[in-house]
Length: 196
Image 1: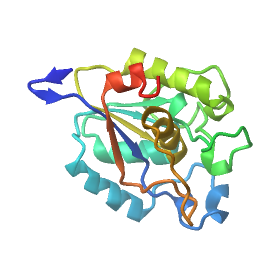
Image 2: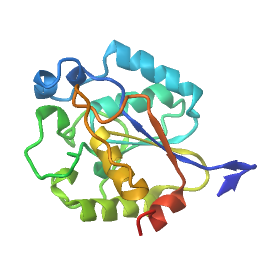
Image 3: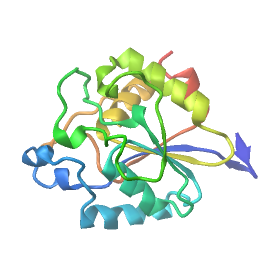
């Protein structure tokens, strides 16, 4: 889809650097970690790449919500359960405190949608995760403006592996990617699937 000659895109970005990223793996015990000052500064630089009037879809974590708030002028932000932290490569394990979703009574004034019926999306095997992700894209991503998904390295790595056959490996700091990497897709990429 194009609006006035410009292709509508889906941008997928990892949240900004947060408190749990400062002393890994010891800081993984922090619940609801917030962005660090460095994370906020780095994320503000992404405004050159991301239109502030885009629609933002974010993980149910404080750091992802704060990241979107730095980029969005219109506060067009929706929290989506399928974008929550995910272990990559997939394994069903108890997640660290930093990777827990915010509770439903957490004080935010944003819309929240649930596309899964599980306690945490990491409970889904890869096939079920991809199926729910496609459902989210098909049902909620519109073609009338750019869409920005702010999520976690494990979710992005799962999507890159499935859709682009790109296998990421963790670095010495346990990260799969930088906080300012931007991955670009269009809606049809997700619906048809590159690996199908």
